[in-house]
Length: 376
Ligand code: SF4
Image (cartoon, rainbow, N blue to C red; front, side, top):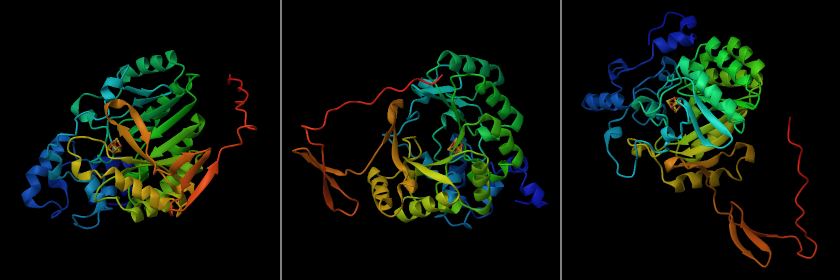
């Protein structure tokens, strides 16, 4: 990608204007000519968008490059698979008003943007391209705010899309100002992959502009240690210095990060830049993603490997987002071996067993704890 100056390279708008959007724009030799048509057909289903920055992370032309595998459409996306779906987590049936997804009682997602700096091939929000989900238009924000105002049980609002940090600063700050005028909205989260795919978007002006709206949390998605660069490290640290706790929601992807060593290296790198490894998602059951899915047992083996090697701070929770919009479930290795005569026998990660006794029945009285006074 030709760029005249560092200034251009570090300008996030330049990056978006110069994103790769067709197979023809990819560096020569990256796609085998026999695959060209299939790659374009896959990109018709879910458009290709790759920022020049993310393209610069590609490891030459290697077909085994995990970064390339996350960004370049694959002919394998065209294979129909009977147990996969065009609507795996039923988001469109959980939109009480356009642009608002609500699958849990206490939180809601606002789709404030329809764009991303890189269209991840494994994206869960591909309904945005199928027209069944769409981001909030300017005239629809008011209806979304009215919904949140009427549903005071929603205390946690996640700005999503697309990527909310592809909005201009003033658009984003206006949305945050409106959300902060709703007293029941206590926490705001930004779901963004920009620190990974477009780190130059994390400007000092953005970080300073977010400060008045705290508490703001940032959920991001580093999937591979090769995504941790000087630039992404600077972006994450700038957000952390700006007072935003960062959590990582990685997706477990075949041929990309499905080894214990890769996830361990990722977790260590994330902790060093103050990003907490939070979730490790099993890949959603979208049509076209069979080649990126792993058996559930792979995820369990990875988490089991991490336990005992990393502190709890560095171990993500393995999560499946259940089909039908039921919601997320944590999946853990089975550590309970038996419960007998008031003793639960537990298995440690290295296989050793130990008993944890219940309190003596004649002494233990379930008391419950005193209720706390609700907050104003
Ligand atoms: S950044 Fe998120 S919303 Fe955008 S393409 Fe990737 S996974 Fe999908």
